[in-house]
Image (cartoon, rainbow, N blue to C red; front, side, top):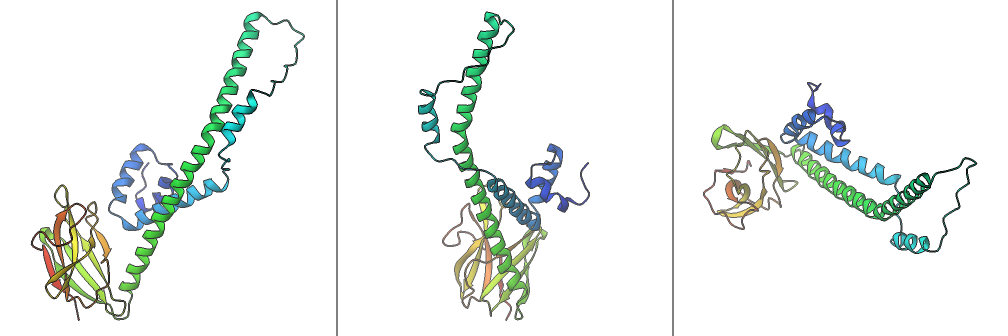
Amino acid sequence: MITDDLHLLTGAYALHALSDEEREVFERHLAGCEACAQETAELSATAARLGLAVSVVPDRETRERVLRRITTVRQETPVESTAPRSGRAVLRARLLSRWALAACLAAAAALGGTAVWQHQRAESALAQAHRAEQGTAQISAVLAAPDARTRAVALPGGATGTVVISHGRDQAVFVVAGMTRAPAGKVYQLWFDDGGTMRSAGLMNPDRADQTVLLRGAVDGASGMGITVEPAGGSQRPTTLPLALTRFPA
């Protein structure tokens, strides 16, 4: 049964412990919940790290060494049973022995690649969690700055926006709710307004209607900010008229 509080499912999702129905519901929630997205990334990274803590990465020569030794090491002679064995039983035993040996060799050969893959996945997840943590810390610092000033931003389609600026930290944050999805192949791009010259301040997440974005780069005396629709990946200069253009609060 799906819980009424989807925020409680981050741990189960990170450990792949949800049913298909629960996972689909939670992933829809995850797309619009920044807090759950960050917590899920951190829990996934932690789970991967714990898995690595008990794994052993074999040296690169393990497979070759096993294959060389198998040609020189004689298989231990089986203990003879007092009961007579049919030719079919002997053949079956030999086939099972060969199959088991082949399976062991395949496992030994694959172990190194699996461990490396796990390690790479863990490192990638940790890096993602670290970036998310850094971004969240910077956003929190701007919002909590003693000199933080806010101003509402008029947006189309009924969306609501607020820009928060800290001149002491020389940074700005844009908070938006109800943003409509950008057209296919397009993305919303943020800009600093340097006295009429627009300087890129980063891209918004195209999959989230509600988000909090740290404008990329220092405010550096910019008088305001703008938002345009640009090709996926962004542009060096605005290619469309701004959807919104507002001055920073003093």
